[in-house]
Length: 357
Image (tube, rainbow, N blue to C red):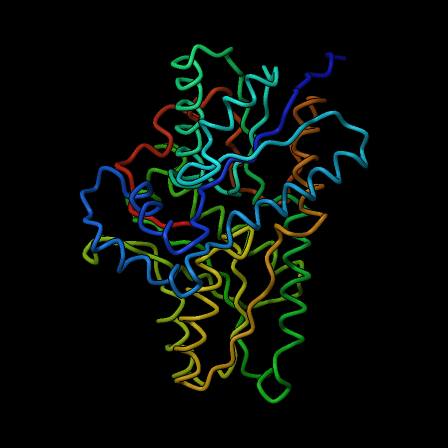
């Protein structure tokens, strides 16, 4: 039996988000760097942040995940300090890895806060890791080997948690609307070119297929026979084709056919990101009220202790060399070392315009 592999830290790597009105435009400048978008336009784009006093929920939610991870690590008797770094805002990943190197970390695991394949969901985190490695070398600090945890869209813990959330939301629909209720699974839309590139030429459209598979598994576990997969939060050039149908457009079409309530499961988001509390809880709800459709949105998985347990189960797979646990039939990848791509040509497209905070 092979010896167990040892790791000396876990880095939670995420997108980042502002935590005050004065941080919104600088944050968006980081997100859109290289695209030539003027500050005046970014102030308009940042409307959804200003609605919440400039505070993205993402950093706070990630700190909750880290707190749960630290509790679960203590319960399991592990010696695995947890660090937190972001791509686009404080705490910046480069600053975090400097501290890790000074603390003596040499072999770190990386939990990227995404369940999926695709450029924004997977490959961009590999680019972050390569940037972190280069930054350590530029600073003359000791090198760290980074191993990224795999995708978990079909992990039993994730599926069962979201199935329970769907069941709770269905039960919360007003009784007089339950017979005309439709269940919708929603995830962040991406350009069709990005989805085609996800998985590489031999496993194309990996992102949308993974989302569809997770939706199917959750619905099956929740006892839901009929549901729709929709997309949300598209941005950028309106002429660029993105994954459809849009959640708001689809809800309007359902209303025309007699639907009086929708149960919306934001399967594509592990926490209540800005896309959840603004695009769904604010914009979708407002549009639905105009057409007399009740919206019942499910909770997300990230803040539960079970989710932290799942992350550490992914760690255990690597430590013990055990086979990945999953319920689906769609490719699971994402576990690479030092920012290597999952396979040659995987997810290689020009950077899509996307906001995910």
